[in-house]
Image 1 (cartoon, rainbow over the protein chains, first blue to last red):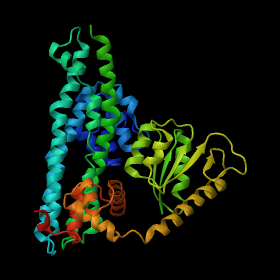
Image 2: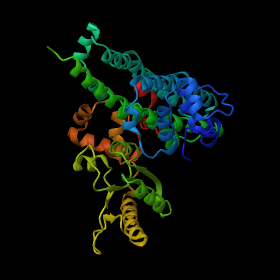
Image 3: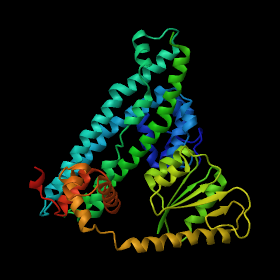
Image 4: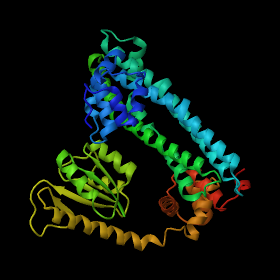
Length: 245
Length: 192
């Protein structure tokens, strides 16, 4: 399917429900009636091209629109990534945790394996949370400030000082691989644990972990291949516009 | 059984190869990428057994680094944008090749990959030595400490750890600890 501005938003979702994730993260409310993609975007104040680039990538999975996405204001992407974060923290992660707790209560195994998995997952949650906290509390505000100050004739003196001593490249080096532990969890469940008595529950936990893993993967692609290169570009422009004397 | 990644900028060629490989026996998973950055990322995440790479793509890493990022038994087949002579090497395919020629070359690599994996098959269980190393990793010792305790070099410890991770598909220390607990290599009391 080729996603075009004139197609109905409801048809778009019906033909690929995975796109619901994109709609949710752009905070597009439901109740589309017969409105087109273009009309819904206009109503919600979302740039049509930005929406189309994201939706086409999620749907076609073919060519990553890195360059094209970089041509939009960085704050749009930050907003998108932020709603993705809250989706993980408020919904996906607690849900998986809850399901592992449920498995633990039905686990009859001798070694209390599910208790182990729960402990492992909780370790993951705390790593994950601090990873996201760093981005939310330091990285994103820096990026938004950078973009905003670049528009001004005179940058905020406090920010100017900060910008001269910092670059997003440092962050990229520390950008820890947040998927690794999740992949381990998945492999242990899949390869080394006999399913506990409630099979349906076990399968569902696996499905959710796979989903989250894939989603995190996309998230990392957006951060490392669009957000950071775009910020590096902004930093260059910033230092050109406000050179050291 | 092999996972194949097609790294090709041309949309038409990429789609053509996807369609051809989709009907080839021995291909378990198939991914395609066009942008150099996406290719590198996919190599990392997907860890292909066979990489079909257009020879004109400028990757952001050197050739040696590319080899290092692929697993040790992975093979590369180059896609060449010009016609190739009749007796061209097996690891080169041309966009001008006929369907038969392409199938023949790709099947050749799939078979070779498979027979190479079979030889390795019976060694997928951990050796007693690897189990010992795993036990120490799970108990929280560093590579250096393990080396001193077992009278081997740190380099040997690292190489054992690589093999353990490859065999078990578990990368992190806490993941390895969970594995060791489940399999009775260490006991809960040992780490408390």
